[in-house]
Figure (cartoon, rainbow, N blue to C red):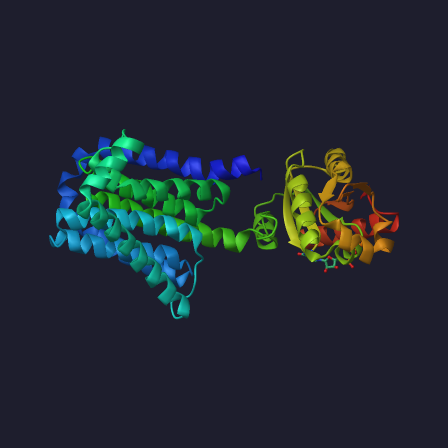
Length: 400
Ligand SMILES: Nc1nc2c(ncn2[C@@H]2O[C@H](COP(=O)(O)OP(=O)(O)OP(=O)(O)O)[C@@H](O)[C@H]2O)c(=O)[nH]1
């Protein structure tokens, strides 16, 4: 998956959907008048459920965010936040959300809990110190504003840390987009919206929305964990067998195996091997002819062509095999490894370019068409036999 596509999927699409959702909520708000009391109570339930479920699925950052928002809602509903405190909490909350993009999910009953609580306290303390500084040195604050940030109002300067945190967060979200980060990003946007456009939607509606984001994130994330291969991002073997249940009678299965991958690993190291697996996965995911690629396990992949006979897919498989053979993989830091394993490296296409080395890998492919009365597993076995044939015949080829 290209980085752009990945960002669209995890950042732009959720943003667009959130915008649409807000529009829809606004458009239909008149119909919900009868439900207002329920909507007011819902954040208590939804945020508590989100916190518990996120914790259960080891998404502790989302659990912390849900718990903090629950606390915030309770304090607001009971009138325990003055307008001064409110600004402090807004800045602190914005910083916490951004910082959470840079830490990992950890178990609740561990030393990491103390670290996370420390981060929350430090963010709130930083917000407090910032506001105190502006309050105690108003002359200096005004001077700084007039000289360096003339476009900012006094309130703008006070809330500047939130925007700095937001900018850093945005870079992180673009560079490292995933569902948890998206969820934190959307929470951040709703948090800003609540502060700057409180009239747009009630706090209860906004928090209900965030709780739904968090719950959906945990749900989809768990789905991806179960059905996606972590290294290559291809659908996993479990997804393959899931798909097999929905296949009709006519389909073709191809088994793909990287040639001499053990030697490659031994020569260049396991990490480089992993990179190659990813590259091969990208190429396989681009197979034409309606094929869908899966990581079967190790250096083996499966491609399923639903509603296709073997003769219809051979050219597509050969094209993908060729594209892998033609793909030049640039390895850096090769000096040490090349010395260690000069023998094995002779077997690879190699061109030394300064400190770079260009290598390529090939794959062997075996395919089998589904026959009447054959199970999916039997069809896969046939494809495996064809793969063995391709290996025996010299590798880097497609065999039926
Ligand atoms: N880097 C990396 N290596 C893996 C992974 N999974 C399996 N391997 C390696 O893939 C290699 C598979 O080697 P073999 O099955 O012996 O076959 P081969 O070297 O590919 O040779 P042929 O299939 O006969 O062409 C082993 O060295 C495994 O350690 C992985 O996730 N990452």
